Image (cartoon, rainbow, N blue to C red; front, side):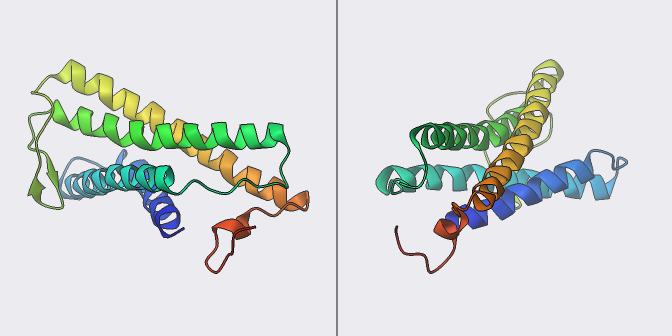
Length: 167
């Protein structure tokens, strides 16, 4: 639960920071916002790796209140969320790898996967934007599903709140 909520807050913050920084004029403010976005993006990638490892070792209990179709949709939605949570920061990292600027996370140098190349950078930057918008849409659908279940009397949110005991 802590990984879920911490990662959720981080990803929502990254989406907000990404939207904020795209229209900033060139200068120290924009450079600082980009540096923070990159640093927290690397952290998000590490956190999703930890979440995937945790989930492999601790599969969630099946929710008997959901029918087979709903369980399959929930599983597909979670798998797609996971995929986007990996691909979005990975595309951002690859975009940054093909610039002339050094790669840093929280002030520490990290290796780049590429070399300065504007065309490759533009490709991965575009992919990062498309993936981020797709992730935002899927997060909205994820939240809408929680609300829909609550309206149908099948509250699923409590399973992700502290103090919950398995059903």
